[in-house]
Image 1: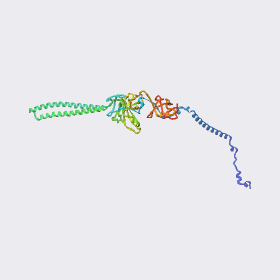
Image 2: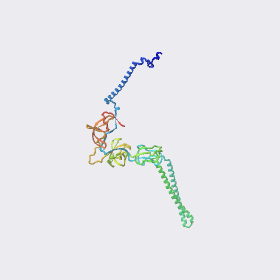
Image 3: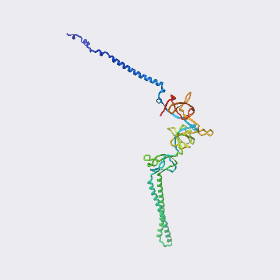
Image 4: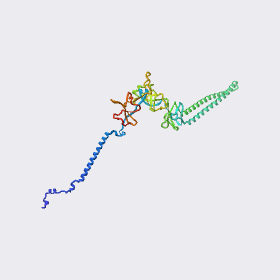
Length: 433
C-alpha cells in the first residue's frame, strides 16, 4: 500500500493551503501616508471654517456701529409732521378732514340727441346763466322750421284773401238787401247773397284756427332747435370738458356706451364747501351755524373762515362717522373742487374774553409720539436723510389724541409715532410703505 493510501484523509486536507505573497499581506507605507495627509487636511478645513464663523460673530458684536446704515436701517411704522396752528384753531373742539366741493355743480348735456357742431368753451371758462356752451347739428330742424314758417305765411295769406272776400260779399249783400226792400229782387237771389257772406265769415274762423296751428308748429320746431343748443343753467366755471366737436350726445346721461351724456361740467366756484366726516364720538360738539376754520394743503399760508352749513342726518356704520358740510365764507381763486382740506370746528366766541392773537403760533403732535421717562420727556424726529435724533420737549394739554408742544420744537418736524424702544441717536431708519 502506498504512503498516500496509508495517510488519514483529514490530515491530507489540513495540509492543503493557498500560498500568499508577503507583499499582499503587508500594507504599503506610502498608502498609509496619503491617508494620514487626507485626514489632516479635512480636520484643518473644519477648524478653519469654525474659526471663521466665530471670528465673524465676535467682530459683528464688537463693531456693530461700523455696519453700513443702509444695511441696518430699521423700519418704523409712521412719521408725522408737527402741526403749527395759529389763533383760535389751536382750541378747536373737533378736527376732521374732507374734500372741497362746489355748492352747485352739474354735468351739462343736451335735451335732444345730436352731434356736436361747435363747442364754445374750454376748461376754466366762466359762463353766465343762459350763455351758449355748445351747439348740436340741427340742419334737419332748420328745414322743418322753414317749412313750418312757410305754412304759417300761407295761412296768413289765405286769411287776408278771406277778409277781402268777406268785404266783397258784405257789400253785395247790402245791395241785395236794399233791392229786396223795394220788392225788385227774388228770394233766391237774396238767399244766395246772404249765404255767400256767411260762408266767408265761417271760412275766416277756419283760417284763423289754421294760423294758430301753424304758429304752434313754428314754436314747436323752434323749441326743437333750442334743444340742440346747450346753455349754462347758472353762473359758474367750466371745470371739465366731457365731449369734443363731432361726438354724439344723448339726453339724460344715457350715452356712455354709444355717445357722451354731457358736454361739460360746470361748478359755482364762488360758493365752495368742505364735505368732511366727523366721528360719532365727537358729533355732539358740532352744531349747525357754528364757526370753523379750514386749512387747505395746497394753500399752506392761509386759513379760511368756515361755517357749518348742514349736518347730514345719516351715519356711516362701517366708518362710525357723520357727514358734515362746512361752507367756506371767503373762498378765493386758489381753491378748487376735490382739494383735500382740514376743518377745525371752533368753540363759540366769548365776548368777555380777550381775543386770541391770530398770529400766535402753537404746535401740536400725535400723543403717541411723546416718550416720557423718569428723567425726561422727549420725541424722536427724522431729518431729511431719515436719521434719528432725540429732542426734549415741554408738553401742554392733551386732547383728542394730540398734545400741545410748549417748548423744544419749532414746528413742521417729523416725529416718529409709536417709536420702538431700541431706537438710538444717529440711527438711520426707513418708513414702512
